[in-house]
Image (cartoon, rainbow, N blue to C red; front, side, top):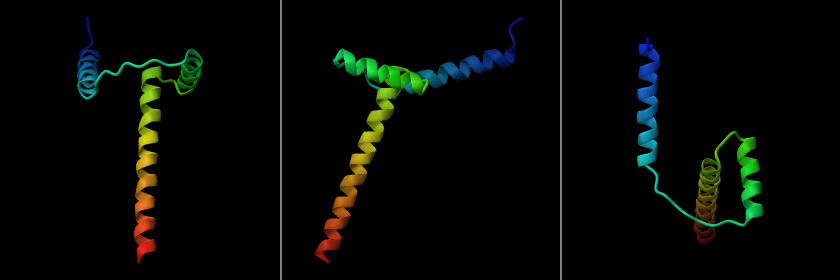
Length: 81
């Protein structure tokens, strides 16, 4: 007999997976084999897939760049005062 609790969890998990997939777009790229190995090792250390690790690293990079730009604009405005 299948536990209702497990079945409900599986449906919720499947819906969450499908929702996450709907919010992403495919991206294909080529990497140097040595870089791929290094990224895979780092992903393994974080218990992440390579794809998820690259996404996390890119999101952090974009966030940092936006913050740096924001700081430059703020500093420019303060310098003009």
